[in-house]
Image (cartoon, rainbow, N blue to C red; front, top):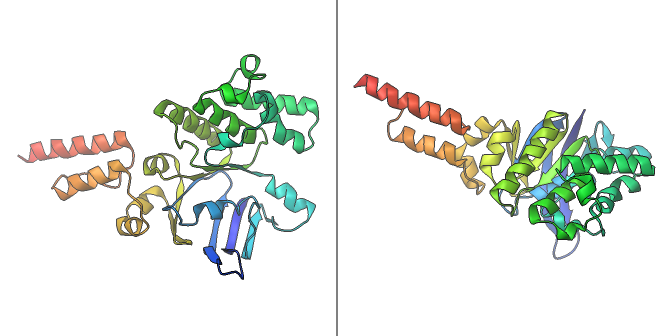
Length: 287
């Protein structure tokens, strides 16, 4: 099972003086169970790209399939395929609109045609996911919460739809370190329980820690596709795309350039510390 793009191009305002091609001939597959990150500078086409994955945008040319079904037809099976893909936009709390937290989370499942018992069950499960006690928070206004709590309610509204594939566009943007850690712990937990995650992020540290595979977008094209180690080893490509390597990688590379025998492909801070310690001990033994 997978999401597959085949030569997808999207052009905005075709046939007008404002015509602009945002993505060009993009092809890839995201396999069920993967944690994929999509990175790129502002204007690289990331947001346009991910909006094709659940049918919010249709390709100008090319096809998008979810589990083998073309999602851009008017058939019932296409609608069912699109519903397998949930999307959390950047600053999703701006999309909250119901009077209570429970009602906001229930909106999607209710629109899916579930009965009220099923809706209530999904609301409770989603609030538990968001670490919001049902009895304490269900009838509260979402606008009485902190920014981090509002973000978790918005994400819970998508989780209540039980998507097989979950797209998150900068889910931790604007959050303090504690709120960010809570959000990413939840996302990692979902992935560990079988949800396929597609993360759009500007934070290379987050990408390096969590992703199995990284797609690099640059000027509307897929410039690279590989594991974190493979991608962050391509320093020139990233620089051309307006991106940085993770700070830990940059630090190790600097140490290596100054003669320390460190492994500059390491992405984990603990592993980096071990590599530095081994290099220092090796230098002492050499003396």
